[in-house]
Structures are given as structure tokens and as C-alpha cells.
Length: 83
Image (cartoon, rainbow, N blue to C red; front, side):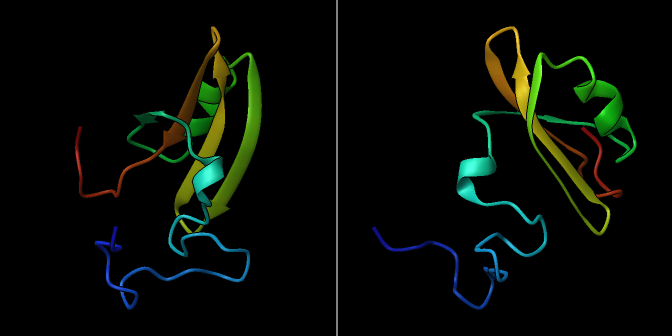
């Protein structure tokens, strides 16, 4: 299957992660929770049973962890988006 994203649009950094998010595929969770403010990520993830991975690149803060046996990824959307 061909990659649907043009190579010029998918910038990979030196650690093999997507540049803008600093995330590799194995650092993602099947369920993603978005929060409106990057500072809220740590407020939510403190309720996780286990935090496996954290990263920050620019305004993008990401925590991947488990709560009640389910894996979640916390991520703040761009400031101009509302969910």
C-alpha cells in the first residue's frame, strides 16, 4: 500500500518521529484524548495508573499511559480548534 502522505509533507526527525509532534508510531495509543490547553495534559495524566511516555515539542505536549487497563494518549489540539 502506498503512503497517502507525500514525503515532502511528512517530516521525520533524527529519532524517527514525526517532526511536529515528536511521536513515533509505537508511542501512540489506540484511544486519543484531546484537551484544550497543553497545561491540562499533566492534570489529566496524573489520574493514569501508569504513564509510559511523555514528550513535548513546541506547544505540543503528549503523555501516553494506562487507566483502568486501557491505553490512552493525551494531546492538546491546535489552539484554533475546538472539540
